[in-house]
Length: 238
Image (cartoon, rainbow, N blue to C red; front, side):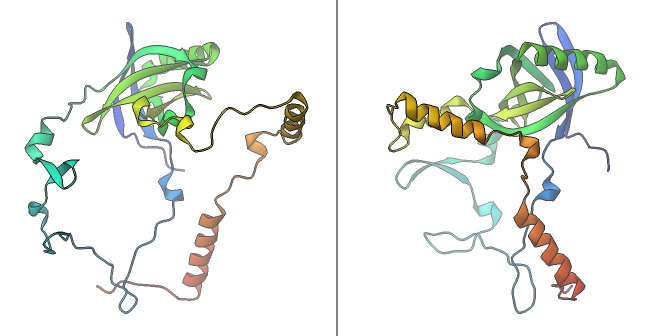
């Protein structure tokens, strides 16, 4: 298996400690099934025109600007120069602002996972020490990182012998569970609760014992192999 390639390098910093690190994608995008839309008659790839819904004209990219709708059909226009003023320059530093208990993090805040690795042998010892300390304390680091011109909240957590960082959603982006219809406080008696807990206990297992496989993706790959073997290949003519 080929070695992972880093997508970012910089420093992890908290208090007076600075650790050179690299960031790697934790999600294997090769496992995702992608289809292309093609014309049945000649196998040409399908393109999409940018069309104005008001005047029905086909537009070039130079004709398109971004607009924020502040009232129905009323927009504030943003030119590229306007948005460039909002872009943040990366400091190449993951700044940890504090450490919180693992139980404080609402799972709904988790967005995208990335692996964090030491950048060089010298950084390895301090990196390993931080991973062990987080694991032993049950704490997660919360900080900020500038990626793709915008600042994100990140969570630094131990994973096996290393570290993983999660890009977090901002708390204001998460709706309240109480907003869900029919979610309210229900009264339960002790016998009903005991029966429910017994059922849960009888089905308790570990994640490693559960067959969590993407059967759809596997079935698609098998079908692709069968079609290729039968020479049912859809080719795009140059």
